[in-house]
Image 1 (cartoon, helix red, strand yellow):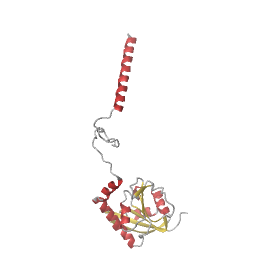
Image 2 (cartoon, helix red, strand yellow):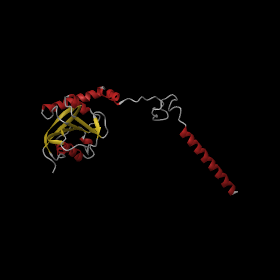
Image 3 (cartoon, one colour):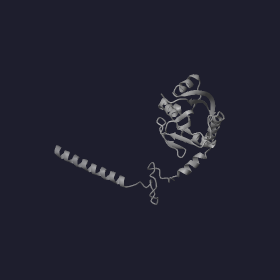
Image 4 (spheres, rainbow, N blue to C red):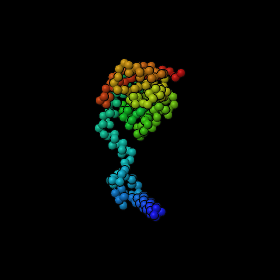
Length: 229
């Protein structure tokens, strides 16, 4: 009796495995009707889910950038940065011929702002590129020669995983006599001192409270004075 039950259970198991395998193969071979329409071109991207049957148009980079750069928010941020950078021109710290590096440049607001006030040679880097304004590079390991730039700027030092390494790379790529500029959330004496101490081959120039993009910020200027020991 036990052998008969075992044989029956074995047959049921084999049958279940066969049905499950057949079902899996059919699911792999058959595309749900809600995913791709019959008349869709071969280049149609597969939807994000089986319920997403809407047609998605792939926009060229040029059109994506035009849409982004023409937005009100983008224009406001670029204008605010441009006003901020013009002040540096007035202090003879920035010139139209200056070679500028924007570290952790995000989508490229700062790069476009520099360009808008006449500074043409501007390089923006970020962990994720935003072409053509920003190229991909690790701010902690910049792919540039020593003393390649006149000015290095960042508004994202507070987000750096290794602040001393981040600052060290900024200094390394700036020429002797060049300027490192940091824009932070508004801070005072002790916090400013901590930031200044991160710079090993530069001297403190000054710090000032400014308003950028509607936020109260502190701008810290350092001038590169020597090579690392």
